[in-house]
Image 1 (cartoon, rainbow, N blue to C red):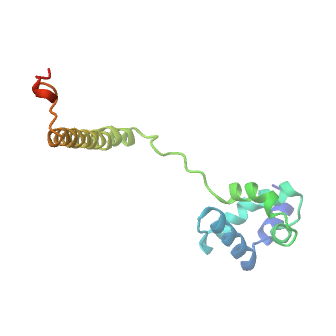
Image 2 (cartoon, rainbow, N blue to C red):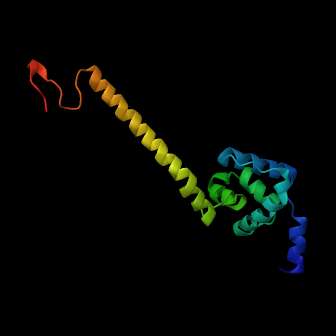
Image 3 (cartoon, helix red, strand yellow):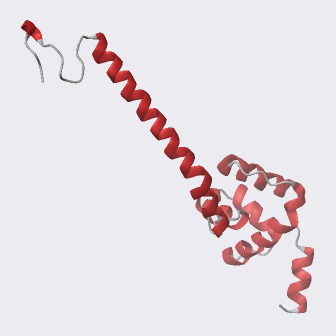
Length: 145
């Protein structure tokens, strides 16, 4: 990056009003809160969008978004720029070990308990109706096998 470009970047900062508008929009769309401590990170990420749209500054980008009514068209790009995709869930062996050693046995045992309760409930219902599981007496006094 040239000295001139670094100087331009260092003087191009998000105004509080613009950060607040972006933060509110991201929260409304995604439920993600962007605290003021993240302003530097957001500035860096939005500078790529400033360049991609051919605008001259973060201020111009925010005006273009909010006053120029380009928010709908820019929505996906904006949200991708300011959010972080976290994809490391269950990537490490200890995650799988926990899943297989703790979660799966609990699910299996709960499934067995539910199955036993349903089976006991069906047996009780048959007994109440006077029908066992075969081997009982049928209508007319005949033996049912």
